[in-house]
Image (cartoon, rainbow, N blue to C red; front, side, top):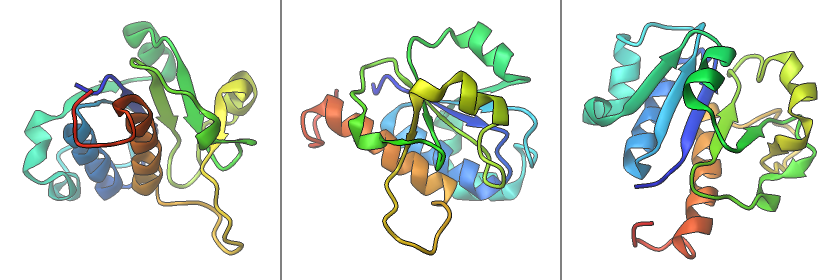
Length: 159
C-alpha cells in the first residue's frame, strides 16, 4: 500500500478528477475531495476517465477544509501550486503524507497561501508560455515523486 492521501480542493473538471481517481487506485492512495465540486460524482466523464477502476477508489468527500482536517488529522501537508517558491524536488516525503491541490480555475483558496506558506511547493515549469500544468498531470508528477522517494528509486517493488 502507498500510504499517501491526495486532496483536491474544489475540483471543477470531472475528467481531471476521474484521472486522479484512477491514479489513486494505481498507487493505492486515498483521495479526498473538498466541496464544492464543479460536477456530480455520477457524471459520466468522471466514470469514463476512471474507467473500471472507480469501484476500487478509496474516496472521501468532505463538506469543507475544516471537515477534512477534523476527519483525517493529517500528519504532514504539502500544498502544490504555481505560487510556491520552493520546488517539489526539495520535498522529502514520508509515509502518511498528504498532498493538496487547488481547483483548475483558481488554484488553492487565497487564505491557504498565507496559512500554509512553509508547506507550499511548485512543480518547476521552465517553459515561458504556460501558466500552469493540467491538474491531473500535476497530481501525477507529485505523487510519483513521493512514490519514487519511498520505493527506493521508483522500481516496480511495492513499498
